[in-house]
Length: 392
Ligand SMILES: [Zn+2]
Image (cartoon, rainbow, N blue to C red; front, top):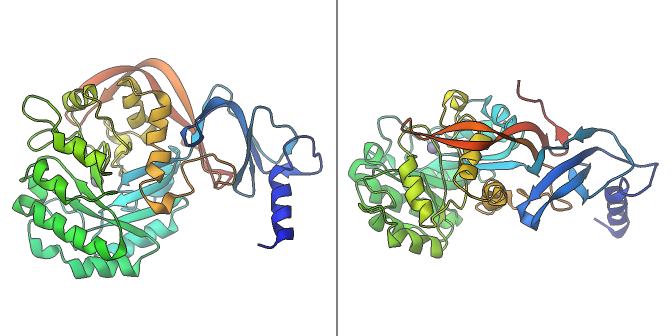
């Protein structure tokens, strides 16, 4: 960009702020409670968008706008980033979760080297930013256990998949539960690290009910790696038999391992584990759904705002709940570097949500319910500065 182009871009960016009547914004989101933890903002603001980018976040933006969204009484947040989904399993997945405010997602291990081309193609065609973790097992997620045969954890094939899809594959996934890996959990994880190392990519592990204890698994994780299903119940969760947090889990967090919710539908989330861990201060770094195209019908998931609302119920401050689904998530993967924020110049991905007060039942993966009094509902999603079709 030369100097003249830069000046034009700057002028365009601020044309709708103040009284420059000749120019227009593409979209103004008016009067919402803007919660943008990336800049520490929680206040009633207007958000102006020009050319797909955030142009201004100000108390009262005047001037013409091609389109306006009345967000009074609503929460205006950066577009949600869901770092544990299976959104690329079906072609329509990305559009469904876009209606929930999800403007970025990661499909975690649906595919291994054998089927990565198809999953990567779905991610590439998604309207929002979709990225993929390749399963260390060449066959991808398999109900009868993709790591039961350790020969399927083929490092060279996984590396080939990463090299072939460098624009889409941003890490490696290893599922370590006993019914998936049997006694191969540690070797599967070692091979995942070996596959990721030359590309300097993180590894995400699916923990809980593993053959090996967390104290054997966690030392194999490096800074930036991710533990998903962090509140999975015993055997081999993050709590000891008395419900105390294993010191190894806190130590892993201190050295930069990320602990992710991974709500899921089956076997991953149990209220008493969540409560014991959070009482000891062990909250998620990131919230995520483990979303699939069937999640609407799963009372434990429904949508990302429902999963986020569980943590409002548990006492996490609203700003932190939103941070865990936006800026914290964006910081896990460089692919999301400029996302999870409404900072000036960022891509204009915005989630508009309604925080309703009522009595709501929140469900874990074991049909356990807890009652909360606030629930976030998705209202509208703006992607790259444009309204997207609302959920019916
Ligand atoms: Zn999953």
